[in-house]
Length: 243
Image 1 (tube, rainbow, N blue to C red):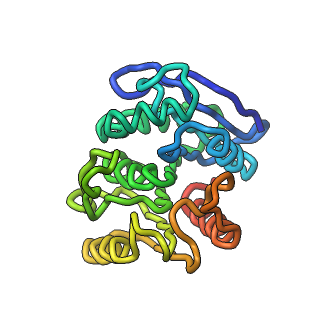
Image 2 (tube, rainbow, N blue to C red):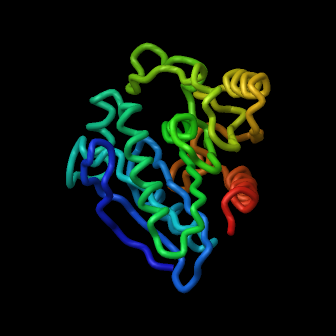
């Protein structure tokens, strides 16, 4: 595979930084837009992007905080984004759309694009799948799809349940039983609404895991839940994105 930083045309025609990892010497590959967590465009998120390329997918992670603090470290850019209330929904959709178009322009791409997001990115993955025409979406413990953030929370966003009827593709949800945002009652409410709407989805909740259980560089990391989750992700994308 090949991997490195590129410039991507995002929302409003803005040039933003992005990280691309892709297979070489092959064609017919599916593509994945990786939406990083609130801590930002960091090395563990780049490793996730490379992991998809190692499995035969082209993966592209836009730096969603690029405009908040150009050239800053991931920590400083994430702090600036929090101070601004998080990434605006409209801007997120535009950046993901730009990333999907870039992936589809790659020689050898099969035209199928999925999205995956972690933490705030899980909510944004759902938002993108309801706003764009995609082929698969993965929500890793994304909160505030059903509920509103508590008072004082840095994210100034609203719930998305009202647009669930626009979900354009199958959805995979991976959650921790010990998480509070989203808690099991929130994910159950989302699943019930998707059932009512006839939207294909599968949710898995892991005992002994809380928020950010995929984050290898944080105390929240739970290896067994993360490995089981990765198996689900690769199986799901294999059915919906692979050539």
